[in-house]
Image 1 (cartoon, rainbow, N blue to C red):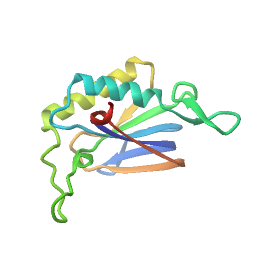
Image 2: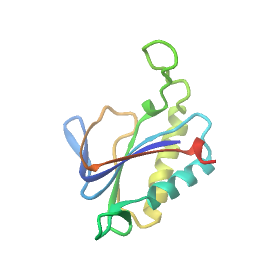
Image 3: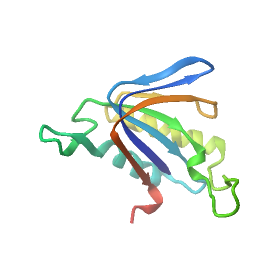
Image 4: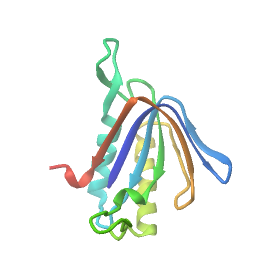
Length: 149
């Protein structure tokens, strides 16, 4: 699994002109599922994303976590994170997980975050979405469960 985490002061997602998810301070997470991802990948990513200490403390140092600041998550499925651009100019998405498997892991990711006490908003799996955000910093972190060792 791959996640792009952006520290935001606010973020929202619209589908067909309707806002279906929005948060204030927190993380906007773009989540991509690889065809070989397992429960171990999911557990790793949940722990890393929710434990990131990328909010500033009183001394301006990135030292506070999402829980420390009472932040929320906006989670957006994004299979294009698994693009391969090795050949030519048209990306290949053959390593992206099949829709049914990917949607299941996407839902499990959000449920695990909720079970940890976080407020989670989300987009619509497989839909065309318009995502808006104000990246606070800017701060953007990429985590890939395949690179955990």
